Length: 454
Picture (cartoon, rainbow, N blue to C red):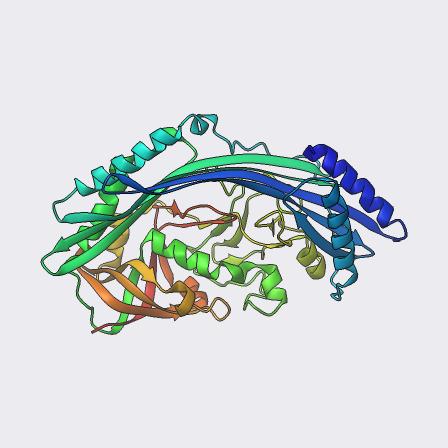
């Protein structure tokens, strides 16, 4: 059955079965997608995955209670299963929180999220890209003795929301990317270097640069030693800073704040970070697969500063959390998949960069530590309290220049305190791989962090 016909029958059946309800509306959220990934080793394919998938999630708002159901098959049997499942689910809801379906915004931004040229890169070309990336990585330095993993991937998806209140929106997106892990050896010393790339523009693919960065990371850490235990001024490299932001991004969710899972509840308008810190959520950022003209409830999105010059301007809201707090939604309703309930999440979430280059940041640091890798985020970070204690790698910095590499150290601190301790923000903004959310940061100079080492 075609999706349009299926949803027409679904909505009509739902109206019939909920005819006795004093308040009723329903909604369908659908998605389709395809993915490709090839992994190579020693020039040979050792992993190859191609998949297609999709489905439809159904929500029924009955007398103020929201019920959910989902299916991957669009046939006549699924119509009744969805309607019955959602109505039964709604009847079991005990929460008194008011729920909403949205009739649609007056206008939506026009975003370019789909690049047809990516479709024309066929499987053979992607396989050759992966092989070339492996070859280039091994050619960078004689000490790079092996590539532990090397892959190229492609993803394409289309999503839409339609409801009985008049909402009907959809979007399409795609991207290509890859990664490589280089292994360097010198005597008994071994170190690895990882580099990821992703883009919506095939002209931006630079395999030579990806290989060079991975090899440089692997080779530069071969002489690593433990640093003495003490409190250091620290420069968090952009990827490390982005990882920390991703780990603790939930503290900016109004949903978490209202559940007592964030220390930012009720602190809008307060200074919570250093004056140089501005934290943006930009759903319209060009070239990001996480950009979107509408959120998970169909509300038109807009860029906003969550922290502006150190001051907390807003938490991230969906319709329910905004109603509870008596404010407007920030259009950050999140549905990670067609079957997922509505939550709250950022889109493209990042610290706004300055015009200070990386070398200038090192010079400003002068004496201290450059952290280039953090490990154990799931075990060593508490996203509620903000505390973290994480294994790390990096470099000593002396006279504003990178000195010897360091490893086997542990960096400890608190995310809320770290925001206040930012001395400077760099210009080298970079994003992690996109998903429902995409996190980015320039390098951040931190006044002091505790380091346990030798």
